[in-house]
Image 1: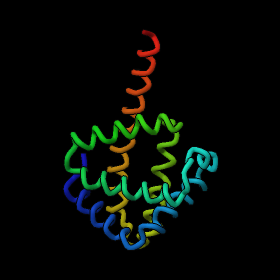
Image 2 (image 1 turned 90 degrees about the vertical axis):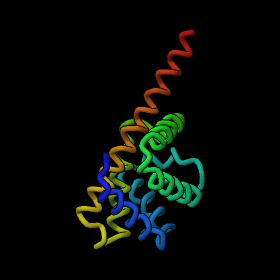
Image 3 (image 1 turned 45 degrees about the vertical axis):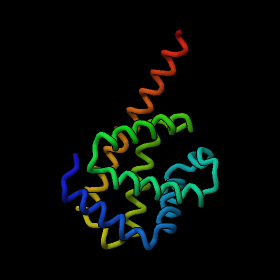
Image 4 (image 1 turned 135 degrees about the horizontal axis):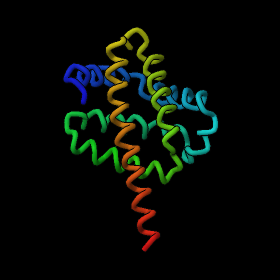
Length: 147
């Protein structure tokens, strides 16, 4: 669970990204592919399109952060979809690392230890719920094939 101060810091820092949104998303993907070049083939669409989707989804998640039930449903559904795209549990750590690296690069001095802790807490929630959604989808698929 995130504190009200962490929610405030995430919203404030995300708003600061707005003037750099396109650059921020491209930095994210550059960092992700530096961390693990083998992930590149998972992204079938143009990276520009993917960059737009990333920031749009971050905005939606941040808007929902104070509504845990809705956030839980959205993240589990995302986890199931990403499983279908070929995302594995191991990829989540790489994505989290790329996200924090992007924030550090784009926000620079505004990426304080407190802001880092807030984003880390948010990403932990995202990762946990998405993995659960992927796991649930896998179990449902396995059960359906047994019938």
